[in-house]
Image (cartoon, rainbow, N blue to C red; front, side, top):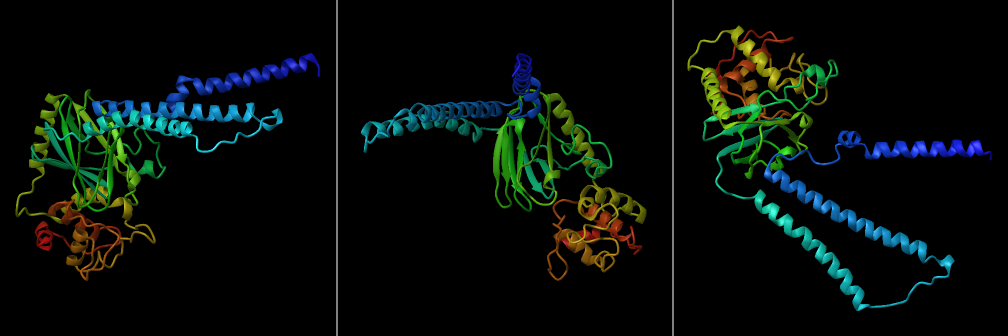
Amino acid sequence: MSSSSKCSGSARRVSLISGIAAVLFSTLSLADYGLNFQKPVTAIAKDVYQLHMLILWICVVIGIVVFGVMFYSIFAHRKSRGHKAAKFHESTTVEVVWTAIPFLILVTMAVPSTATLLKIYDESKADVVIKVTGFQWKWKYEYPDQDVSFFSALSTPRDQIDNKAAKDKDYLLEVDNPMVIPVGKRVRFVLTGNDVIHSWWVPALGIKQDAIPGFVRDTWFRAEQPGVYRGQCAELCGKEHGFMPIVVQAVEPEKYAAWVAEQKKVAAAHAEEPGKAWTLEELKARGEKVYAANCVACHQQNGMGVPGTFPALSGSKVVNGPKEEQIRTELMGVMRDGKPTAMVGFANQLSDTDLAAVITYTRNSWANKTGEMILPDEVKAQRK
């Protein structure tokens, strides 16, 4: 081989090694990979991160030592060099060593782990209490001390989900009503589920707690700086599991107080007067908004549903049949004869007015032309 060929091959090897090193050790590439936790913004999240890193490096050291000894033994004591396998039995020294070392390692990990768990489950008095309820597929937030409650659902436009429009930076991580909390205050969460098991997970806050129907779980955190922190449901909870984001907005206490006051005004403005005289067009217009927020994912914008999974509402016998049967289906998720449907009931999610509006909308849209108007009082009567 000529000297020029050797130089060319050497140059290629140097270039290849340089390229691999640039990929492996580039700060930019590590940031893009996102292999580690999100930046912690609460004391609990910082403790969890530090515990994670401690145990990770212990595992790294164990791996290096174990595989280092193994590969050295394989290389230095191979048969081709004349080594023969040692013969020994019931060595007390070996037994003590390989029992004591793992014990010490476990104690080293157990002490900080226990301390972190005790902090996570600290039941001290909270400044703010929020009840979180998981629904298929949205979250309900209730502030019992402030008499404020609302639903938080995905707000990503359907065109982005259906690949008909460009996706923005917060694709599938944006909601219509974010949870708002005050900075520097201890916030306690009480979690449960309405239908199936959900999991409320916000990595930057160090919070991941299951929301289980029939059970109440709790956790807490204290946000140390203002910001918007995003998470998702971390428990497979059905068809729209991937469309159930969480957004927490931490604000200064003064802004939090202003937000609470605004929420109370909004609730008062939406409170319906008993006996209000609704028109068909008013209910249809309101029902269209309710349908877009709660029904479109399964039954589609055109009311045709998903064949084989979710039935079409356009031309449906239920929608065009007795209105009492449809009201019961919307409320309880079952037909009049008790036959279950694929839909969960909306009795705990929608008000009488919203249910009356969406039923009116479906009975007078697409191929459905009943001309009938469902009033809130009719829904209220079916709840009993």
